[in-house]
Amino acid sequence: MDSLFTKLYSYRQRENKGDLENFSTELFAHCLMDDVIFQKSFMDFIGCDELIDNISTQQSYPKFGRPDIEINTETFIILIENKVESTEGINQLPRYVNILEQSEKRKILIYLTKFYEQKEIFSEKINFQNIKWWDISNLIDRDENNIITNLFDEFLLENRIAMDNNFENLDIVSLENISNVISKMDEVIDSVRDYFSARLGVFSKDSSRSTRLGDGAYYTYKSIGTPHKFNIDLGYYWWNDEPVQLGVRIWIPFKMNEKDYITSFFRKNLDPLKWQEDSWGKNIAFSNYWSLNKIIALEDDQLPLMIKFLKACIDELSRLKSSNSPIFE
Image (spheres, rainbow, N blue to C red):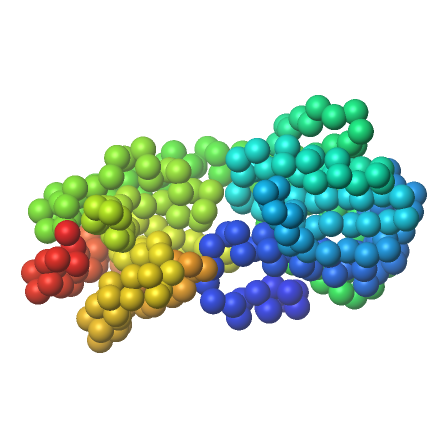
């Protein structure tokens, strides 16, 4: 059974991974203030022997940025930058050093990440620490901490924000099979390459497909427009705990009000065809997916079925292109 926080998160509009970072940031800050035992465990872990006076999130400092969490005690100021999937922004940590240097308090800067990242801060006055979400999860004791903190721990584990870095037998099996799985996905995508190119344009480079694996996807795409309007993506998707989907997607990487004529066009023409519309933060997607589980259950010869489905999706977009070519230019 999913934790309370996972259930709440499922009610959101589908968003980009940066919003998962914001979500985990707010939960972490709440638990630190709400659970004194958890707070003390965390403060001891980072080498601070005081309790928190106040904690804030997304506090803005003009010219220097917006640290995810700021903690103040009687004699300490602590800044925490949370990264779940993204990486450090340009000079982000040095800018946070500038924020800390304005304070007379003792200073701690924490870079909190899903996986360990080697970072260095050269300042004798600042205690810089690389911490993983797995470390935070290990501080939570189900018998000692309150129910909200325990649910927070479940959320971290269920959403694979806190992950153990030790290899298990299943990891070895996955590594042995990954090449075979990628080859099968490539075969399907490459089987419609010429069909797609003749109707909608040439695919991106093959090497771009694997760069999406960390986001729960493996696909190729065609970029439309100069300046860029949208992408046509084709491949496999498996966000969060959802089943693996095969499909074609229109990805519009803009706020809706900035490209309203594009979103209105696809909404008008794709909704009747039962394409799915989703909001992902600032982005809009129109997609037609088919669950891989359902394909597997139908019959043994899956490749012709998948090719037929993808070609049908391509045909629907090709007809739209013929009826309104300026959108696709």
